[in-house]
Length: 124
Image 1 (cartoon, rainbow, N blue to C red):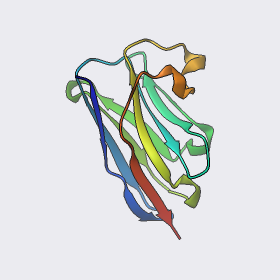
Image 2: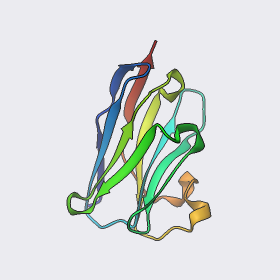
Image 3: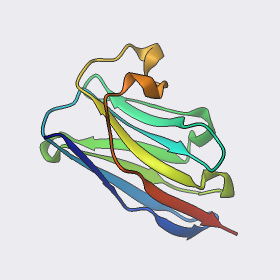
């Protein structure tokens, strides 16, 4: 049975940091990433690690968020620094066993497996 379990969310002030973790089990994934969804908004791409060790992050979090992967632990991390109010959202871990085409990485419909989400709230 495939499982993706996120942890690390919480309440933080603007400018603060959080580190999200997503522990996976049940199979090996080529592509692992993070999406987020704020109230009333569509789910949006945040960051992804793909094709072994390549990474890609959304422009909105460039320079502030870093994605990394520990293959031995089947875990992907999202280090979030300099958090802003607009980063408030439910963050979801997503994974797929395929090598997803680079241009498709930002679309949530291309990921087969999802975690339950973890809330990140940034306050002023």
